[in-house]
Image (cartoon, rainbow, N blue to C red; front, side, top):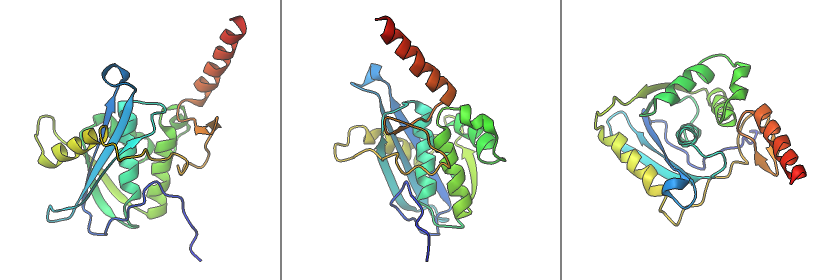
Length: 206
Protein backbone atom coordinates (compact mmCIF):
# COMPACT_ATOMS: atom_id res chain seq x y z
CA UNK A 1 0.00 0.00 0.00
CA UNK A 2 1.33 3.45 -0.93
CA UNK A 3 1.76 5.78 2.02
CA UNK A 4 -0.29 8.96 1.66
CA UNK A 5 2.07 11.95 1.64
CA UNK A 6 0.80 15.46 2.51
CA UNK A 7 0.90 17.89 -0.39
CA UNK A 8 0.82 21.64 -0.80
CA UNK A 9 -0.31 21.44 -4.42
CA UNK A 10 -3.25 19.54 -5.91
CA UNK A 11 -1.72 19.87 -9.40
CA UNK A 12 0.17 17.02 -11.06
CA UNK A 13 2.39 18.21 -13.89
CA UNK A 14 3.59 15.83 -16.64
CA UNK A 15 7.12 14.46 -16.72
CA UNK A 16 7.89 16.56 -19.81
CA UNK A 17 8.44 19.73 -17.73
CA UNK A 18 11.96 21.02 -18.42
CA UNK A 19 11.73 24.57 -17.04
CA UNK A 20 9.68 26.19 -14.31
CA UNK A 21 9.37 29.96 -14.22
CA UNK A 22 8.38 31.20 -10.76
CA UNK A 23 7.60 34.58 -9.24
CA UNK A 24 6.13 36.09 -6.10
CA UNK A 25 4.35 39.37 -5.48
CA UNK A 26 4.03 41.31 -2.24
CA UNK A 27 1.85 44.34 -1.55
CA UNK A 28 2.71 46.00 1.78
CA UNK A 29 0.02 47.72 3.89
CA UNK A 30 1.21 51.10 2.59
CA UNK A 31 -0.06 50.23 -0.91
CA UNK A 32 -2.95 47.90 -0.02
CA UNK A 33 -5.67 47.82 2.69
CA UNK A 34 -3.83 44.86 4.24
CA UNK A 35 -0.57 43.21 3.25
CA UNK A 36 -1.08 40.73 0.43
CA UNK A 37 1.15 37.93 -0.86
CA UNK A 38 0.73 36.02 -4.09
CA UNK A 39 2.75 33.65 -6.26
CA UNK A 40 2.74 32.16 -9.75
CA UNK A 41 4.57 29.59 -11.83
CA UNK A 42 4.60 28.49 -15.45
CA UNK A 43 5.77 25.05 -16.58
CA UNK A 44 7.58 24.82 -19.94
CA UNK A 45 8.37 21.75 -22.05
CA UNK A 46 11.70 21.19 -23.91
CA UNK A 47 10.26 22.85 -27.06
CA UNK A 48 9.41 26.03 -25.17
CA UNK A 49 5.66 25.48 -25.05
CA UNK A 50 3.66 26.34 -21.94
CA UNK A 51 2.28 23.18 -20.34
CA UNK A 52 0.46 24.85 -17.47
CA UNK A 53 0.37 28.07 -15.47
CA UNK A 54 -0.89 28.58 -11.95
CA UNK A 55 -1.29 31.50 -9.57
CA UNK A 56 -2.85 32.05 -6.15
CA UNK A 57 -2.74 34.16 -3.02
CA UNK A 58 -1.00 33.13 0.21
CA UNK A 59 -2.10 33.43 3.82
CA UNK A 60 -0.90 36.81 5.07
CA UNK A 61 0.92 35.58 8.20
CA UNK A 62 4.61 36.61 8.33
CA UNK A 63 4.21 38.73 5.16
CA UNK A 64 7.28 39.56 3.07
CA UNK A 65 8.37 39.72 -0.55
CA UNK A 66 10.80 36.84 -0.03
CA UNK A 67 8.11 34.61 1.48
CA UNK A 68 5.99 34.94 -1.66
CA UNK A 69 9.02 33.93 -3.78
CA UNK A 70 9.81 30.92 -1.57
CA UNK A 71 6.19 29.77 -1.66
CA UNK A 72 6.17 29.98 -5.47
CA UNK A 73 9.15 27.62 -5.48
CA UNK A 74 7.54 25.28 -2.93
CA UNK A 75 4.23 25.01 -4.78
CA UNK A 76 5.90 24.55 -8.16
CA UNK A 77 8.18 21.76 -6.92
CA UNK A 78 5.27 19.99 -5.21
CA UNK A 79 3.39 19.98 -8.53
CA UNK A 80 6.14 17.96 -10.24
CA UNK A 81 6.20 14.18 -10.66
CA UNK A 82 8.90 12.07 -9.04
CA UNK A 83 12.35 11.94 -10.65
CA UNK A 84 11.84 15.20 -12.55
CA UNK A 85 14.95 16.93 -13.85
CA UNK A 86 14.49 20.60 -14.64
CA UNK A 87 15.63 24.20 -14.35
CA UNK A 88 13.81 26.70 -12.15
CA UNK A 89 14.06 30.29 -13.37
CA UNK A 90 13.60 33.22 -11.00
CA UNK A 91 14.34 36.93 -10.90
CA UNK A 92 15.01 36.83 -7.14
CA UNK A 93 18.73 36.73 -6.33
CA UNK A 94 17.99 36.19 -2.63
CA UNK A 95 16.13 32.99 -3.47
CA UNK A 96 19.25 31.56 -5.12
CA UNK A 97 21.37 32.44 -2.09
CA UNK A 98 19.04 30.66 0.34
CA UNK A 99 18.72 27.69 -2.03
CA UNK A 100 22.50 27.27 -2.00
CA UNK A 101 22.58 27.47 1.80
CA UNK A 102 19.56 25.42 2.83
CA UNK A 103 18.57 23.08 -0.01
CA UNK A 104 21.53 22.40 -2.27
CA UNK A 105 23.67 21.53 0.78
CA UNK A 106 23.55 19.33 3.90
CA UNK A 107 21.15 20.46 6.63
CA UNK A 108 22.52 23.07 9.03
CA UNK A 109 20.74 24.14 12.26
CA UNK A 110 21.21 27.80 11.27
CA UNK A 111 18.22 27.37 8.94
CA UNK A 112 15.89 27.15 11.97
CA UNK A 113 16.79 30.73 12.89
CA UNK A 114 15.60 32.07 9.54
CA UNK A 115 12.20 33.40 8.64
CA UNK A 116 10.45 30.94 6.30
CA UNK A 117 12.41 27.99 7.72
CA UNK A 118 9.25 25.83 7.55
CA UNK A 119 8.93 26.56 3.84
CA UNK A 120 12.60 25.76 3.23
CA UNK A 121 12.33 22.58 5.29
CA UNK A 122 9.27 21.56 3.27
CA UNK A 123 11.21 22.18 0.05
CA UNK A 124 14.01 19.94 1.31
CA UNK A 125 11.44 17.23 2.10
CA UNK A 126 9.88 17.45 -1.38
CA UNK A 127 13.29 17.28 -3.05
CA UNK A 128 14.15 14.12 -1.10
CA UNK A 129 10.77 12.39 -1.37
CA UNK A 130 10.40 13.01 -5.09
CA UNK A 131 14.11 12.63 -5.87
CA UNK A 132 14.08 15.81 -7.92
CA UNK A 133 17.10 17.08 -9.85
CA UNK A 134 16.69 20.85 -9.83
CA UNK A 135 18.95 23.72 -10.89
CA UNK A 136 18.06 27.32 -10.09
CA UNK A 137 19.07 30.13 -12.44
CA UNK A 138 18.41 33.86 -12.30
CA UNK A 139 16.87 35.84 -15.12
CA UNK A 140 19.43 38.55 -16.01
CA UNK A 141 18.47 42.06 -14.93
CA UNK A 142 16.58 44.02 -17.61
CA UNK A 143 16.53 40.95 -19.87
CA UNK A 144 12.84 41.50 -20.70
CA UNK A 145 12.33 37.73 -20.75
CA UNK A 146 8.76 37.17 -22.06
CA UNK A 147 8.12 34.11 -19.88
CA UNK A 148 9.41 35.87 -16.79
CA UNK A 149 7.17 38.83 -17.66
CA UNK A 150 4.27 36.40 -18.06
CA UNK A 151 4.70 34.79 -14.65
CA UNK A 152 5.26 38.21 -13.05
CA UNK A 153 1.94 39.42 -14.48
CA UNK A 154 0.18 36.30 -13.17
CA UNK A 155 1.50 36.79 -9.65
CA UNK A 156 0.36 40.42 -9.63
CA UNK A 157 -3.06 39.50 -11.04
CA UNK A 158 -3.67 37.12 -8.13
CA UNK A 159 -4.06 40.05 -5.71
CA UNK A 160 -7.25 41.21 -7.42
CA UNK A 161 -8.78 37.86 -8.39
CA UNK A 162 -11.84 37.53 -6.14
CA UNK A 163 -12.28 33.84 -7.01
CA UNK A 164 -9.07 32.77 -5.27
CA UNK A 165 -8.71 31.44 -1.74
CA UNK A 166 -5.36 31.33 0.01
CA UNK A 167 -3.39 28.10 0.22
CA UNK A 168 -3.66 26.49 3.67
CA UNK A 169 -0.39 26.13 5.56
CA UNK A 170 -1.61 23.11 7.52
CA UNK A 171 -0.01 20.72 5.02
CA UNK A 172 3.58 21.93 5.33
CA UNK A 173 6.01 19.04 5.17
CA UNK A 174 8.58 20.19 7.71
CA UNK A 175 9.58 17.42 10.18
CA UNK A 176 8.68 19.59 13.19
CA UNK A 177 6.18 22.46 13.19
CA UNK A 178 5.72 24.72 16.21
CA UNK A 179 2.25 26.26 16.28
CA UNK A 180 0.80 29.23 18.14
CA UNK A 181 -3.01 29.47 18.22
CA UNK A 182 -3.16 26.85 15.43
CA UNK A 183 -0.83 28.84 13.16
CA UNK A 184 2.66 27.61 12.20
CA UNK A 185 5.48 29.74 13.57
CA UNK A 186 7.66 30.33 10.52
CA UNK A 187 10.25 32.70 11.97
CA UNK A 188 13.14 32.57 14.44
CA UNK A 189 11.50 30.55 17.22
CA UNK A 190 13.62 32.01 20.02
CA UNK A 191 12.80 35.56 18.90
CA UNK A 192 9.11 34.67 18.59
CA UNK A 193 8.95 33.35 22.17
CA UNK A 194 10.84 36.41 23.44
CA UNK A 195 8.37 38.70 21.66
CA UNK A 196 5.45 36.84 23.29
CA UNK A 197 6.93 37.31 26.77
CA UNK A 198 7.66 40.99 26.03
CA UNK A 199 4.05 41.51 24.94
CA UNK A 200 2.75 39.81 28.09
CA UNK A 201 4.98 42.03 30.22
CA UNK A 202 3.57 45.15 28.56
CA UNK A 203 0.01 43.94 29.19
CA UNK A 204 0.86 43.42 32.85
CA UNK A 205 2.08 47.02 33.12
CA UNK A 206 -0.99 48.44 31.38
